[in-house]
Length: 256
Image (cartoon, rainbow, N blue to C red; front, side, top):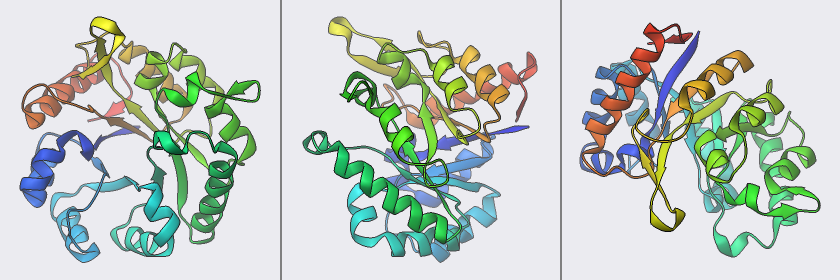
């Protein structure tokens, strides 16, 4: 049964105010795992203690390119101590998007180092990897064709695939078996086509179909994420969890 996690970037305001209390609230709402986006000065021992207390699993961590480049061994040691298996490349700054060949070589090197230490390295996409080509294919596909699965797994952000004008269901099928973690996110488009993320079920993304396809593909974790919350972020993740519970009640093969 697929488990449900939360990308903690969603509640970064609450995490900054009260790291431990926010994790307790996330667990109370029924999330089984968390994907970190920073540790707010906590040591690995402190993080491990609150995970043990709450029963939450460290399912992954978004790790900035600068940390991967400058302190990968430190990051690996930290994540092994807290019990996290997935180190995730989260975002590429615009200034680096004209040097994809070098970035891909870096991804290969980081994936090799993670694999040597028993960890899984993943890439998390936005829309630009699909709207920009490398050769004759979208950058996202070029990344995965040039770095073998043993060194780089897929963390598909289904919302950004949709926003880029591609079919998330096709991408889930394409990378089935290489897709341990999927971000489930909803959005609306505002004037001018800008995206605004919203709670699950409140937008235009076919989140039920995406969840169904991800489960059928063998994904291990479905991770709720909302990049920006118009209201209280803890209320937003409670609303999204209610959608997940209704999905499960209606036959979704998800453990909540």
